[in-house]
Image (cartoon, rainbow, N blue to C red; front, side, top):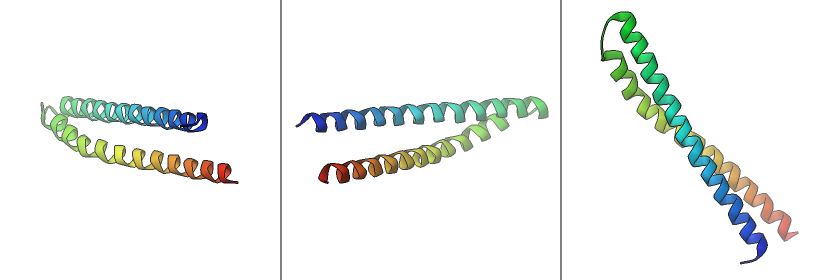
Length: 91
């Protein structure tokens, strides 16, 4: 493995770590927003766990959909950069 290959592998590893961090933060934000909105609605309408549970259960698939979207977008960007890097090295 040459120095250039090691450098590219380090960049890929770093981007994947960043991607995992983004997905974790995104999940945390979605869950917090749904719980806080559910608690506020339950307090407003005096329905103890109903809105919190409904919004929390709705937030789970929303979080998964957003993670797939962000992952797909980031991996497409990574693939595009990798292809442009291969074109530069082949010239």
